[in-house]
Image 1 (spheres, helix red, strand yellow):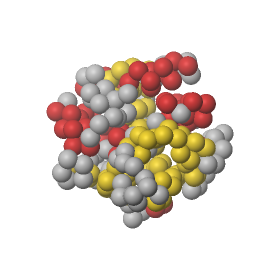
Image 2 (cartoon, helix red, strand yellow):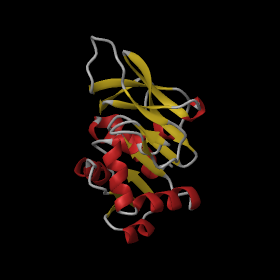
Image 3 (tube, rainbow, N blue to C red):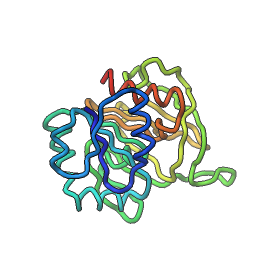
Image 4 (cartoon, rainbow, N blue to C red):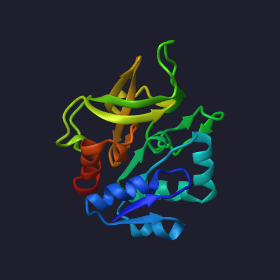
Length: 203
């Protein structure tokens, strides 16, 4: 059972549609009692880091995510803002502590004059190492992006994918049972659906 964490900032319908295409069982997590019903979690996200963390804390979801993921070892997939919230802190809206599940911080994209922010559209994900999240997905596959901030870390061993948009940035991460993907797999057609399938059926 996949738990889609609803904290008011997610692209929920697209993720629901993807899981339904995969015939995957899921539950919408809309209260603290729902966390125990799921074996894995998807943390979606569209919006700002500061607001995302405020919403998680207000709902008491931050504590339950940490308990279920760190203590109970349930897998989690963070998508876009959901990936960013997995880190130690973010700069969007003022320095804000994140969930602290993967070492790193979130910084604004700093690009040349010919590159616009936010980064919107299709771009390649270079697979830095073999990972179950990319099972049966060709290297340098295009995924759909929309973001103004990116994940940074000194611990590159947790980086499983990077993307070039003027500069090279981290687009996929993994530490044990914790996974994050910066683009939107639920909007990335065949291979995006394949990535979600890997999380649901393989991980």
